Every structure is written in structure tokens, then in C-alpha cells.
Length: 270
Image 1 (cartoon, rainbow, N blue to C red):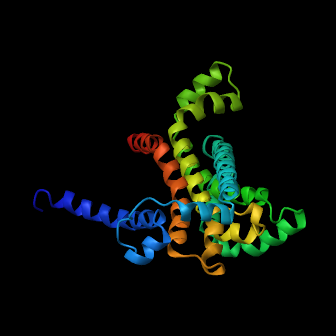
Image 2 (spheres, helix red, strand yellow; image 1 turned 180 degrees about the vertical axis):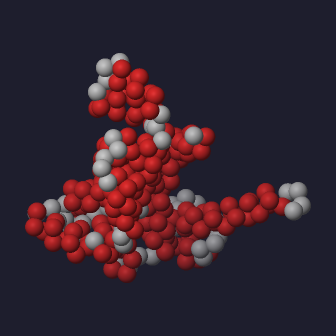
Image 3 (cartoon, one colour; image 1 turned 120 degrees about the horizontal axis):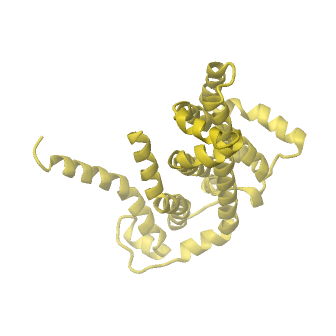
């Protein structure tokens, strides 16, 4: 391969991936008259935030943003916590039937969400949690922690026994060894899980669509999906909706990019 061919190919690939977001951003800050006169691929005559403001007010975007932040943040923290406790028992505690327990968690990860809808729907109805954010938080905490438990069990299964033995000699019990030794050493891996759980939950659409029917409880992806086809929106407002839906997840990724890179790098070195 000629020198410079790889960077050129990567540049073309990056441009191909970024171009749709650029077009969405351009059309989100155009006025409706500018879009009608010049089309979707022209540069805006001037910055217009009319479509962004209209969309924000129409769907009460601030409330939807708060719902997504509460649900995604709660799921990320609770799922990591549950994964650590499960993996500590399975990976280090060596519970009986460890292999079968891991197979169970692996099988849980392969279940499609469509297969969970009916039992979860009737369970939520019976417990009075239907159409509440708590129901979605509980569901996705369990789903995400199934993957987290499977992954962390493999990591903690290789945890150096000498460190744990030294902690026990110093008088540390099981829980103190977990919080004072295992968690700090495993922090890079836990940080990666926390970030992925947040982004995965943020992008979830199917189950929140089923369980969050009230307008006040809906999340950002749900309200974006419901707007398509139910209400007439022009191209500039559609672009504004897409832009406002993308920006929070991108901002979260950029803020924690260094943490994510550090966690992946540490895992690769180990």
C-alpha cells in the first residue's frame, strides 16, 4: 500500500460518517424560508434558532432530557453496583455452580427485548409500576447488570489472590476487601462499564416506548420516534429534533472520552 493511502482512506471514512451530522446541523440552524429557497445542502444565509426553539417548546424537551438523564444515570450506577456484587461472589467467592450461573447470565444477554415485553408488562401492571420511570430503571438495571456480571466475573476471576490474602491478614473482611481493595484496583474497568451502560440506556427505544406512555415520563429517543408521522414537522424542525437528540450523548462521550480510553488501555495491558 502506498504511503499516505491509509490516512487518505481514513479521512474519507471519517468524512462519510461526519457528513450526515453536518447536514443535520446546517439545516437545524436555517430558517424555513432559507431551506425552501436553497435546499438542504446549501450553507445557511444566517443562523436561525427558530426551529430549535419551536421543537424545544413543542415537546417540552427539557422534561424529556431530565427523564433520560435520571433513567440513564440511575441505571448506569445501579447496574455497575449490582454487577460488582454479583461478580465478586462469582469470580472471587467461587460460589457453587459458578459455571452454570455464568451460562445463565450469558443466556440472559442473548434474550431479545421482544421476548421480555409481555411478562414485564403484566408484572409492572400488577405492581403498580407501569408508566413510571422506576419501572424502566429496574428493567434496564437488571438487563445491563447481566452483561456486567458476565464480564466482571471473568475479570475478577483473575484477580491476584496474594492481594486479597494480604488484606485478610490485615484484618479486612469480605466487604472491606471488596470496597477497599477490589473496587479501587478495578476502577478503570468499572468506569468503562459505567459509560457504556449510560449510553446504551440513553439510546434505548423499544422498552421505554412500551413502559412510558405518559408524556411527562417519556425519554428523548421515545419522543423523537413518536414525533415522526404523528405530527407534521418541516425539515428544519426535524433537523432540530435530530440535533437535540444527538448532542447530549455526544457531549457525554466527549466528556468521558479520556476515562474510556484509559479504561480500555488498562484492560488491554492487563
